[in-house]
Image 1 (cartoon, rainbow, N blue to C red):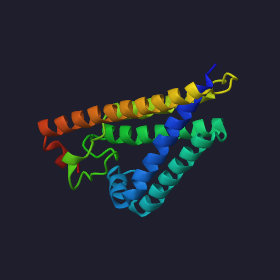
Image 2 (tube, rainbow, N blue to C red):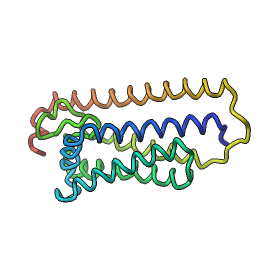
Image 3 (tube, rainbow, N blue to C red):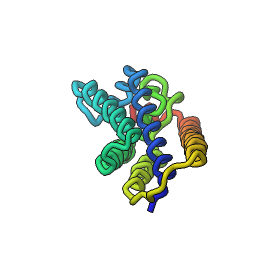
Image 4 (cartoon, rainbow, N blue to C red):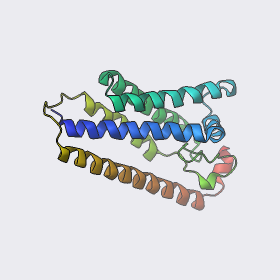
Length: 191
């Protein structure tokens, strides 16, 4: 059984994650198209459609989490999207393309690889863990009303999760930057 406060924290966290990810894509559209092109998984003619679809799906998922709409479908779509992101990174890592931008900061690997965060197995694992975490929402929820203290816990929990997520991303970005410093010519061979 899942406590309703924990379910609410999970739902708000995923809503924030997906809405901010979509906003980042939409507000840096050309950079996002460049990153998507660097993955070399879509033909260039389909990049705008693919990018638009990703942004719309993320907005939809954010709204679905925020409104608790069709939990099963929302979880399935979230798990699928996070797995798709992990798969895209894994395919490129297996191709030996370790130094392309993950898409977290939109620095094109062709222009300025040092300012972006290169893909890595840590990011693949992060996306798979986020997808798996979303499945917690499928657990039955304990029936009890939320009290004022629950809302305070949800707010503090959200701040904590945002800080942990940011710290984890920064650690992975630092590791990526250090690898780039140690092997500065690796990225050029894969561009």
